[in-house]
Image (cartoon, rainbow, N blue to C red; front, side, top):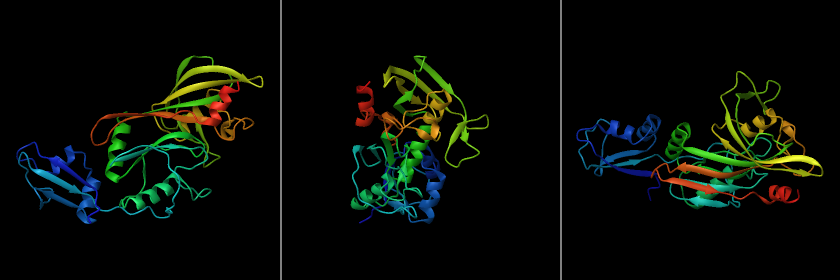
Length: 300
């Protein structure tokens, strides 16, 4: 059985070279190199052709990508995945808190990536794990995974074009005064840490919109329930921007929060919107706040 990932296209331009058509169909040069040298195949009307082949209108072009190998060091494991949506191209999950998206030195097992490897193995899918939207270990909510390198390439193009939108809800220390505001402040690695980030002039451009949902008190301490929209995807972006604003996330000890009321940063990805990488259909997914964050709000 041929398990190679396959896409089919119909030629619409008379005399166009196959290479040019593949570029219009967003097949990357890197993918073409892999197809040529690593066991892929290009056919036109069922006959193997090279990229210099001239097409005729109505020709059926089939692109078979070479099988992918699991990333080195990624352990295959089997565990629970809360799947919100799945098709031949992507999987959207609702991630719990206290689970890494990818394995790390401190947490080498039981990550989303480990479990996805096991899930793909059960499906006999010749692919490794391609994370489209990543969440920190203690952040819960929606994340997207591509089932193939080419799909990951397409979602990367979509992200750079602003066609992938994520919104979060968080609980922060203090009362955020402005009902809505934009934080545009560059983020870079802190000189004294390999993990911690900070707002710094030589950092990467970062833009976060903040909207106040509710101001409240817990044990006489002021807190604010906020909604945030990411326009960029820097590491720890929301956590860094809110600490920079003087309102660190509740539970985020790395950036000035405390864990007296919750044992992780109170941050949840509630909304993910994206254009489907193949069909171009607009997809929208939502996720309710997990119980620990909801309980904080309810106890106010």
